[in-house]
Image (cartoon, helix red, strand yellow):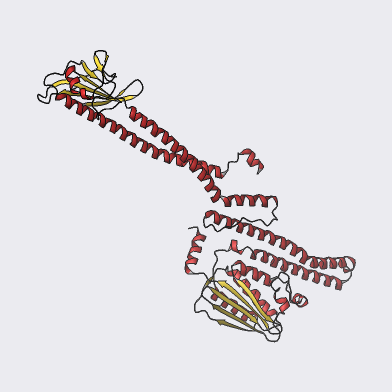
Length: 501
């Protein structure tokens, strides 16, 4: 962990999420702002052009009504007199500091009137562009000293003769436009900044809330890495999303791993404990052989037979211990297995009738048709064999074994009943424990190691079933196995998973 951190600088996922959210919001907001900004500025520029056009038309019409042949300074002055202020000489023309036509022009418009020869007769300010003769109205954008401006030109025609009597030029310095333009720029920058900051903060806090299970998983892993024996799990919340599912699956994985570790520890401890006696017996007989067995054929025979018996018992014990360990792993290795229960129960029933002809076996089968249970076939057979073997072993005078098979809406029940020794209430709660024998002396004579029922219980529970026992001393015992039924849709889904579809 430390080497990884030294080699690659750690960057929090929350920080990455926040930066990603801010960047994404910036890109989207920038696109929206650019579209809106362009639309507003174009609308403002259109308004300025419209104002310029209206000024050109109004002033040119007024001047066209003032003369029939040619404009003069006095006629222009007289025509626009009512809207003019005190003039100031500037060059060869008259310069007015304020608008010429009230309501049509304002401070950002410069109006200049020329005669047919191009001599300026009237002006409201200093013009940026000189005279240009035009045959029709024109409006264009021109670059000035500070910024761009609009300039409109139109010939002035007499309202009576329709002849050109002069020329009108109106310049719009676009001060109003650029004032609004800069204001929009500032508002756009502020809006983008607020969006980035707000989205970054929201992304960070949202990621903190959404990614909390990842933090819990990280902390749990660190704790278990330091001490695997600690019972630390990821806190499971009511979240119904992928991270909530991940937390639940992570805990399941830890629990399963812990069970495997416990099983291995139990296996080692149980094997060590159970093998101690047979090993001591074999060692004792070998010591006897070393002392006297070489010269005593009877002692030699007894020691060899005893050693072989204990060796066979150790072999059986180890096999059962391995079966017990594997029984705890069925949920991983055989999760998609299914078995027709009716067919298998009848098969086990027929087999035991054949190998135990001195016993009376009966089967009460209430199933109209076969059903599938989510159990590997060999494991279900092993469970039934264990229960039937026990029923045979612990039957006394009444050699009768009764099997039953029934179902409800979602589960199937298998019963195995004998009428033998029975189990006391004291031993009933421990009958499924490992190496537990109701009567240790009699169980050893009958070859039992106390693992059969433990294996059966672990197998049944590994397939999400239950096994129970009812018993009374001197009257026999009844073992019931309940297993879930596989519905047709579940079977198809399991096959698809198994085939990788």
